[in-house]
Length: 152
View 1: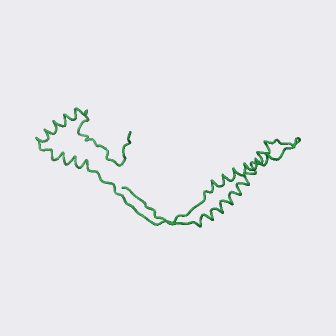
View 2: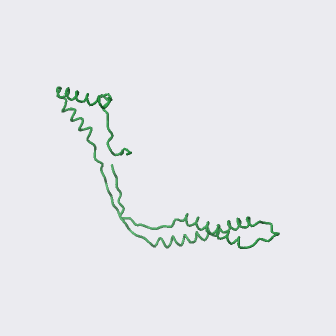
View 3: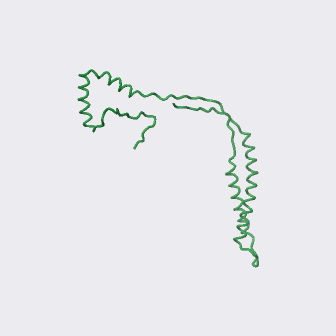
């Protein structure tokens, strides 16, 4: 199955001519050609058909310019990754230490509390780490040629 091309010319129907079935249209077209030749209107129909079939070719305008490429850190991903990693490390550390029997909290509460604290610490460490990575990445610059194509 193919999809229609938006740039391709769409078939146009002459509003003066009614739509007919393909077999009837073929036989009617043969009769119409014979009548048109007799009337001398073939030249007018050929000129109108050629004008209708003539489609303006797309005009492509290309412009190239030199650009400077600069690398950057994706801060959001680094921060989220560091927060998740900090939370997981804090949860594992909370599981290592035992909870006293007469404590006012359970092991689950201790693990959850340490996960929140670990995520906050991981977020701060990730922020500092991403700032350092950003400074290092800004040192790496390059140049390239960008080509912009406009099709009209």
